[in-house]
Image (cartoon, rainbow, N blue to C red; front, side, top):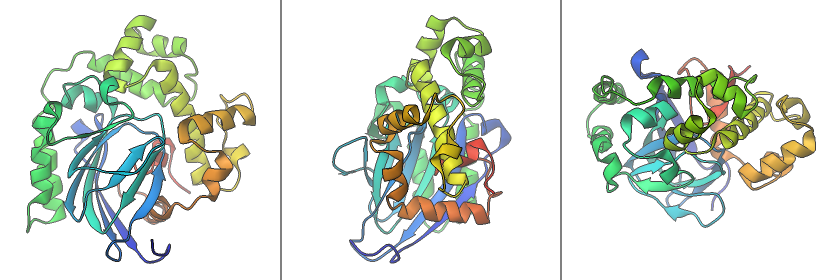
Length: 301
């Protein structure tokens, strides 16, 4: 398996044009250098959908929730998740693009609930046929990263004029979920301006989960982000105000991550810890990132 120090990673972020910002988190290129056969395993928190494209080396192995790590594909789409995502990488280069719910609404003709907590082969699934050219772009040889990022941006901008049903409501819900004052489904309905039943249908279609689950997940992610930003020193200081007490948080943590907060804090995070260090050194490289989520809740100190 190797040691914790026998590999190196590099992440480059490429901000997208302003018209694309409501739809994606960030475009990034992730490179791993390590000995042959070395597999580096880490854990991601629940997140929105994401696409990853392998340029060189073997595609990732992974699993959402409990179960064995399984080989993935050169173009893998991870649906929105409510469970921890375990993954393993060998020496490779991978491009990634995180999809916000509005991005799912505009770019993917499929109900998000049908791919929630799962991964699919983007090259063979008919719903993702229109995005397969992204794999061709990143795999083209002899092209600089900046030029690949520009071509990806141009490709995505071609979709920008396509009509999207309920786009205004999806964007409003997307923003409301990030507001700490929105604590219940009724608050969410009021913010978005739609009925509870309409909200439930919209969330299943574009967000992947019921409104109550989405609010629980955002509350949990705010706490996890605060814990990470604070240097992983004290869970009690990181708890979101919406938790009744620490026992409530522990139950939620186990439901989302499959372990206790203490077990998570004590476990090695060889990839995410190094990404966090890099982001601290270069926190203005991109406005948001899905590896990990902390920039969604404020800049690192």
